Image (cartoon, rainbow, N blue to C red; front, side):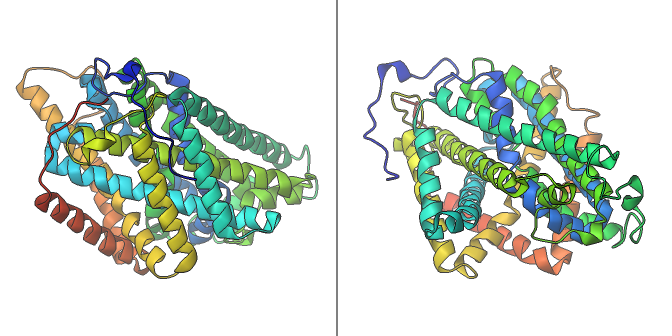
Length: 467
């Protein structure tokens, strides 16, 4: 079911001027929504309860700090993309700034990260849908991957429209929830609720578990925010990559921070943080207390849309990264091939197949092999962000040596760039010092060492022009 139809190269799919070889049919609105699709998944609607339990109202500061780190990384990507829009995704900028080997490790680790995320999203959907349909969870998970694979196999414009409307549904749902909860907060509806801003500090203070609790949550929240950089991947399939990346940078991260922090702030004002149950959706809890009819059904639909959208973006980004890696000789040359739809179908098929294998492993060995894979990929996104920052610093120095100035300069360079390095390293140190997350650093480091070793023993193929 996941095997694509035989790929027939189309003469219309010849590589365009910038050498991407992909169909340039996405628009600015698609790029922004694709990035949002990768960032807003089931984590917002369910996992935020775990974050609230871990830090109390201070969780708002945790989301703010994580959002600022991602924003800084995206701002650096904007500087590099405007300077060299034909470089492709952020992996291409790492290649420009740090060389081929750094790009090899960054690209493959990033691909592995999102393949694992694809299986996690499919598993999350199965937990919700399987009981409703009365079928096995594995069947639902594999079926959803197959469905999203079919969407990606179609035209690139069709994928963009799918993701645009699914992401718009998520944004609308968050907006409607925040409006309803805001009305309840001011006593317009839900008169049985006794909410107020005082809930932010009347249950043990604003920092009931101390400031360190806020730092300990940063890794998990950064994992939730991962996906903003997908904008640099999607922009390669537009007519003006640099402009579209800058537009996404100016809006995507800020929007998502407002979605997360705005909705969580209203929740914490309506319900004391110590009454929110970990593992249960605080959104659903608020709607139940207000007395909204059909709240559970509506939230189930929203969560499923969020999961499908995130999985859709996941399969998209894995295929484009693999396609770009192949074009530079870091993956089999046969993957540098697009079908009549303009989509890299072979790269899509490989990502989907690996996601299916991991999903089967998750069903067969949920606490063993799959747990190892999940922990091994958990810290990888931090490494990739670190590579982006180092690449930006290196390329800015090169521009300075050449007597050039960036058209879209990073704010307060080099201070904020090095501050971002320090913030990411601080998160890594926090993970090492926290028993629950130490294994992610250890296994993530092992994964990176294996990728480095693979790159050292694998002869680099000659880059192949897309067909």
